[in-house]
Length: 348
Image (cartoon, rainbow, N blue to C red):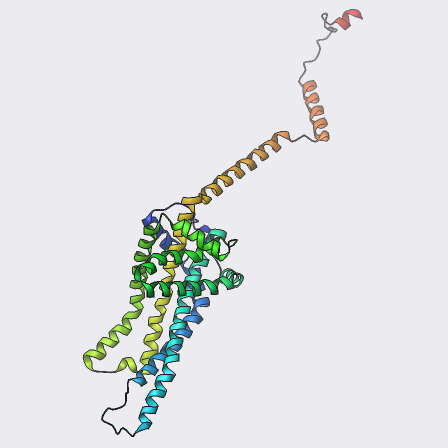
């Protein structure tokens, strides 16, 4: 089915609107295999983040029952229970944040890998293709998110401006490292700074637009949780703290994690756009393909005209031609000998 679809040429120059439309065109064409990969590969990580998030929210709910300030100060049992809950809750909250971040990164990596494999192999990427690429690049898949998280955390803690400046650069780093796997990490950093040097505002604007789109899509899954919390505030109920309701609402809201794959697809398309602007790699590949096709056609024509006939067929063909000549030669008139103009006849 995928072979009948026209191949999207990602390796070409695009303006801002073409980058955004190219990302959604790729998402539309490859929706089923991409969603299958997200559910089968990123799904377990999202499910794990849901479980830990539910546990963290229930623990936080237990912490809400603070000890009464008017209670007997010698009643240490309630104080001990409160601080025990707090000590247990903090690691669960940290684990929830860790697994949520891990789920987001797995979704982003699948988007980067899918776009990279699409350029390499074409449409209809299978789950096995993506898992094989993940295992082949497992070191990079672990190290790059850690590096980006540390750099962006330090940059935003120091000042907002360095963090904003580095954000589009860091989002281009994973796809560049996939495409330029021959570069070491320092070489990849240098290459990503060079490729974005004259296109930073382009890249930053892409973050804003795609971030808004991903956030709006994510809000659709957050809407049930928001409505239940609003009803709790209006009616004075406590549905959002009920374990059953909390589990269902957290599961629905966590499905919005998959929406952030559009950011990875957009920056993958943007990377190939920047690479084409700088190196014209796609144009050179198309020229080489045209030259190869012309060379094959010329070789076929040359082989056709140089083909030698079979000797047996040539002799048979000559004999048939001679028989046809004799068959249509008019017979000699009676009483007429050979032609007088024939020198041999005159001699005889």
